[in-house]
Image 1: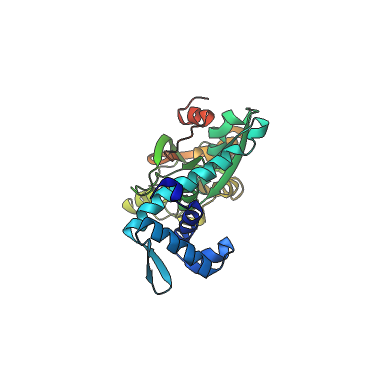
Image 2 (image 1 turned 90 degrees about the vertical axis):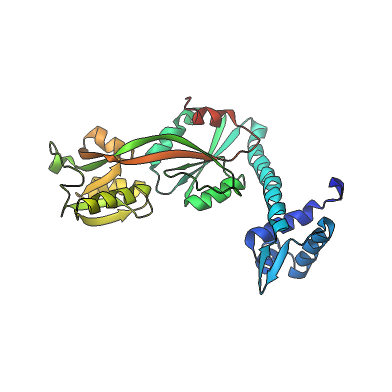
Length: 294
């Protein structure tokens, strides 16, 4: 079979079905009948000379050939999506950068990272937040250019990604200056019974903190568990409780003196990563950010 004999329309339909794993749902999304969709995938299988799916009850499972074809289809249509993303605004000389960040990442950190772009008149930014696996799916489909995260991307040979370590920062214990000015507490030993606001269980920092408390047999009173760092910042500012938080989250409140640093632990750190795909098109401004060049 020659390249000109490959029906990319059929390949696109296969790609959508393989992603959804269900013929009926894919047909509804594509606005075609289930029989028409099934017939076009059948034609693709006949052209390739191999079955792409095994049918088990109402579910479809990719064969070994199907997995191989899907990996190529991901690149073909992913690059198509990347091209469309790149073209948005290009007619006006604009460069669009699409940045995803995990919901548990500090918005202050994200703003600090993209700050060099804010004064660049040639750049249009698209900023998204969400769960890491959702963002990575969008990254692999070339709907995002980079994902900022506080944990590395999981290793998966079927989904190659580049994970660049951007740095880390020590975690601080902060409290309202009106009550805690001039005081220092050891983490975790002097936190027993104290009211604390903490990052939620999904935050990478939380596992570290819980392990420290357990090893020291310390049981603080957990008054709030907060995934969203912007909300944790508000609680740190307004609740009167002590808060275990990455310092960048409350950088403005510490600068103005509304909050003070009561303690710090070198055993608690938040790491920051920039996750990209080995795509072919390089955006110079993004490459400069990844290299730490303002």
